[in-house]
Length: 146
Ligand code: SF4
Ligand code: SF4
Image (tube, rainbow, N blue to C red; front, side, top):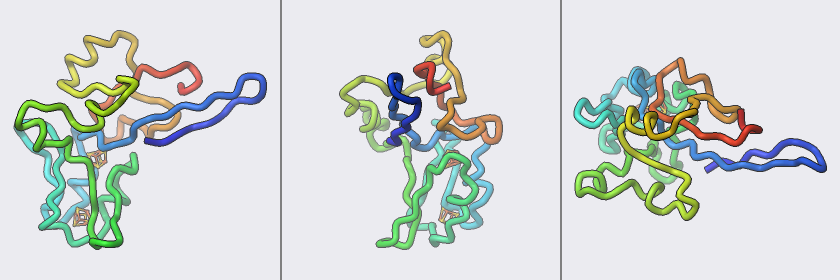
């Protein structure tokens, strides 16, 4: 979760945005990884990171426009949102979604989410150009976030 601030007195603003992996249609991280450690799962559409195969070269981190892969010094490897696949497999929602007290996050089929939220946008100030890789993320932003 990243916080953004702007505006001036008497109209300052602050908003928070979740910048976890967008499980892109054309994932730059997968293209950048020479070790098969980033894979687009054909069944779910999730982009999954395999810790066992990762050598920590950080090329995926450089390639991702959205800052999703994170290098962990302690392990020497990348860590990235796997969509809580283990939870999805047993019919549960990802932890970020079920744990959001404001109910500001939803997870599911992107076509269904778009249909359920008319007026959605796929670009806000805090988010890199979505035409690059096609992240499966939409927003219902406050006006100042556009
Ligand atoms: S958001 Fe970044 S890490 Fe996630 S699939 Fe897209 S390019 Fe890969
Ligand atoms: S850090 Fe790991 S997942 Fe990322 S490109 Fe290198 S081997 Fe692949």
